Length: 219
Image (cartoon, rainbow, N blue to C red):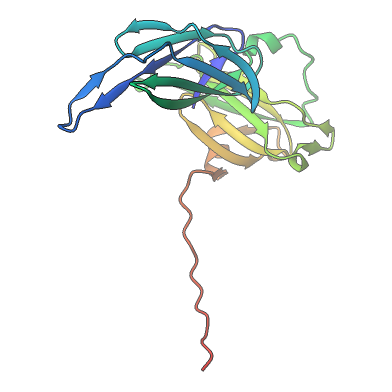
């Protein structure tokens, strides 16, 4: 899943490529301009019908996410009379700078998840998005109110990030550039190391092993 910022124009690309029986790959244009259909959290958001044909088999379309959430992008096209579809998921995050003037939460009700990000060369990594979203209606209930929105933060020029989340809340903790998603429960603590929180969380993509049970036969 790719991450984008609310309010910033996003370009989505489509490559139409086929493989011959001999194994050779080739690009081909669609019979007509492909259509890009966009939904936000399952609801219709936008339809782009004027995609640009950048080169043979290559198309692009520009659009702008207007609110945070999960966008499903579906390209529909026809090649030599046969219809095809391809999908992509993008999550739009609210720019951390837009919430800088909001009233600060009571420190006794939230836990600050902190971390420092660096690239493979050891340099501070700016622009890494961290997001927490409640998983179910039940987990959205807290001692201070109903958690109706996500909490997001982005690493600064020093690679540091701090995300304040309501204590006791259970939901998904996501780190954009790392591609990690974990189900976690925020501890009753002032601060918590983000990486420790991720390590303790449940990996939703982890392969689960079946527990086999012997059932006695009746003679």
